[in-house]
Length: 436
Image (cartoon, rainbow, N blue to C red; front, side):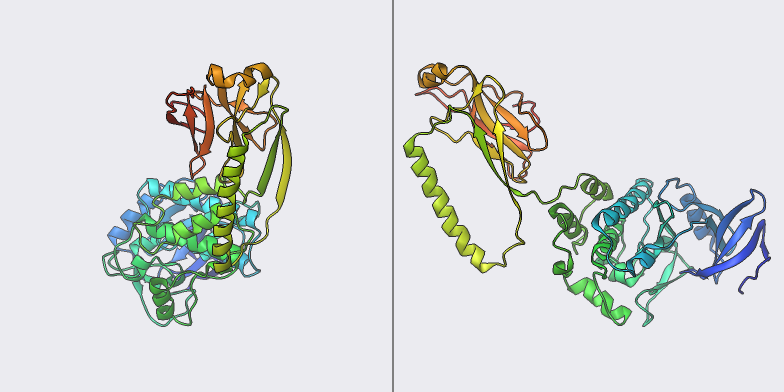
């Protein structure tokens, strides 16, 4: 039965009702022993012994982004009282700015990561279970409680269904959580693991930056069918969203859990290391010694022309991407370095447009002119990140020419120990240097 102001549950004195949750009524109360305010969640049914055991294991979670479970009664839970609106309240005002959305997502990811390390799966992550404190801190509520509940599926509202009832605990075939944020395997009633939380995380991040749920429907059945059968509307993701975050969303919302992101820590890393789409960069190197044979120039021109024709054909088959800024800049070689290109292009731009790698020789112009006679052992590869002012040599690339980036931009392939009439071994090294 509902509680009234002044009622007592053991040492807890009810101060005021807060609202209704998945379990039942929620109240603000005071712990008279410690003189602190808490939140009490009342259940309509008494908890089983298994529920109490699992609740106490959840109480061991101690993380700044997780709402702490303090105590378990016969039919109530005592939890940390978290002030502030829920993320659902915030989203009702419209999509969040990208930086704010990613800061919240990072807090959620850190909470999930801490719980997953202890073998606890949330199973009911949604914006309504995420609170934003007045200082901006993120708190994830009701951690792991869905694992102890059993769902009843009906035609209830999509926001609150399926509702949780606390009876016999989790078993295969049950459908738990809130329909709009269920992973496909969860919607099918199959056993789930932490990858279901990763799906829900992707759903929450998608909604945070778009202002709309990944899957909508008038009934729970409609939503569950969409989760299982339909693909997300990727056109709803703002064009300003960095490519790295778009990739993260796609990996989190893979329907096959085997193809989905496998650890939420990877999502946290992707958010922390996100890079905005790099502008196309045209770089020129200021050196009086840059020269290239006419035959190579014509060969490169032919290759570029062929690529241009091919690209134009396929460009016409697809929608053009949003226009990007073209950035022009000049890079001056460090003192004493010169570039010579007798056979190979000596410049390579990273796929993301953030780094330039080039081959240069330390020596006089006479040495450069006699390079074909003396070999190219004095050459070395240099890296120039566009965020830095200076180019730095890449360790282990002595004698290296013709640099080429790997598709993921983390490694450099190059030709080494070039001697006229001799072999030209192909080698690889990490962009940051290391074993070759």
